[in-house]
Image (cartoon, rainbow, N blue to C red; front, top):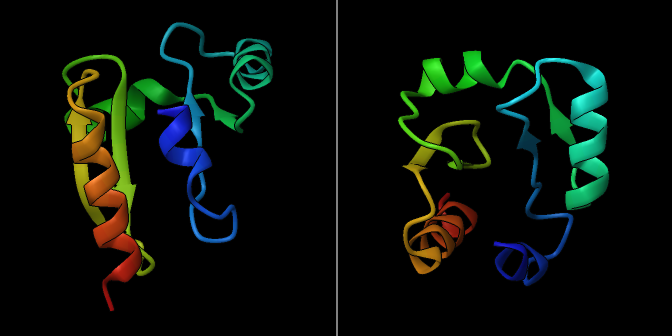
Length: 91
């Protein structure tokens, strides 16, 4: 996943992680430091709202703020990359 996100300009793609094991700020800070991306708490609510069934859980949101792709579990990175590309070129 890091390779995929590193291949897109930071101005066009934002990556945010969620800590599914800790619901406190200190856990999010530790994960953020480890991954090198911002990390949020409250991921259980996000998982519930988006119907996540496994960790990790990926969400791609287009420029209009619409969720255009979700994936539970690792799966195929190419599928996620294709979803990111489609979201970037959509008008």
